[in-house]
Length: 276
Length: 338
Image (tube, rainbow over all chains, first blue to last red; front, top):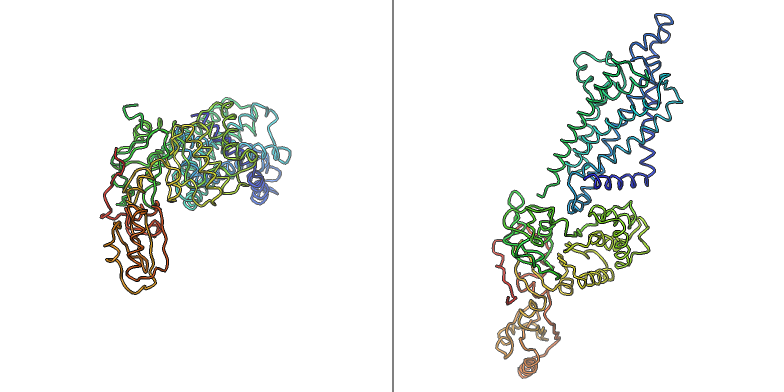
């Protein structure tokens, strides 16, 4: 199954790289988010000049998980949102492959049906990682303040967090894409799901900003788990043992979501692709 | 494998009902020998594609059984998929990939080792005259080029049997002829070919055996020559100068005429032995003082076979139907003596 999934994944990546518009759009989306949201919604604007006089950075850091500025807080959240939106919209490729009959042709090949699903998931993760790496490379010299002890291992940690998050969302949306029969139904499902997932998370604001009824949802959101985990590394570099424990918990949570959605996706794929 | 291993395809009482009650295939039985080209002929909507989708493991069976090379398509779909090649009616290539890339992807998914695949890709592209286009993106191909490339993607793993759904529909006559040539060449090399078509001449020219399907049933099957012979004779069409009167009974009484059908002002005479009947027919007509405006003579065609067994011409049968199934459809008959 692995070699077939990789072959199908490679096909999609080749297609993507040959379509510069798709690549540029995926990369620029994150930048728009950071520039527009980072400036217009920056809560530090409201804190400055501070009513407490000179202590605004302290209050800000306290509220925003130790981040020294909003961009530093926002970047992991925006990357989480980019993962969500990229993975949801890229699911449409599977819908188009079904409509064109490409999936039918693949279904006459001696390959496991789940490799059609995993091929799509794998290539989506690869595309997301390309976009995410690009955002990080751009934002580090432009306002993101990494902890002094932030090293290569921490960078790998951040990338792992977002690879997992992309796996979660690609697993979910590819599963949906493979079970619907039209582009319209797919985007209806995408619109229905992405906004609640996006705004019920700590991607843009810390958990203290949420009313108490929303807090459990925001805490359990995969976007929150990923944003919080990445923030821990970005803000602190080397983690204390309690920080490491919460990082591990967040990674485990993401992995659990990943496994659950992958299972759901395989079920949906098997059901959708069985002879009828 | 079992005793039916000599049959490339064996279909018994195959029925497919799409909910709630559309009988797309209605108790079909036929078999395809190894190494033959078998044509499933019928108008659009007759059930041909559904039969092919069942054999290609894409559609489920409501009742009956279908075997491909001795493997039951419902119970051993994986075994079936490893020995078949499928060419769907619509082109399903990846437009953004190059011709060779499409071909090599198919090879990889059929577990063909890379060096073997490269060699085979070269051979196949040569066969379908696309060697120089292999490195071009498929989006730049013409419709005919795409169809030819699609054919090669179904052959890269050397399948035992290839299923072609309307292989030349919508193509110009030159491209069709070329595809027919490739198929004949592949068949000479031992490939079993199962194809659906609604082109009578395609079935006639390529198939060793043909089954005519209408309303989900096989109405008649046999070799094109047998089917045409079963019409018992050639057709002489006569149009008289005096269009007002009916000469049917006059013509029916003539020696050597087995059947007369009036179509407008002209009469279609079925003549079991045209060579001996023609002189006496002409002299009788002349003796009666009748003037012939026009005559024509045709050897039996598959179109006439279709007309004979369905009561409609193929063109009429293509008209949309109000109901998916006609209960009074004729019962299947096999003109082969076997």
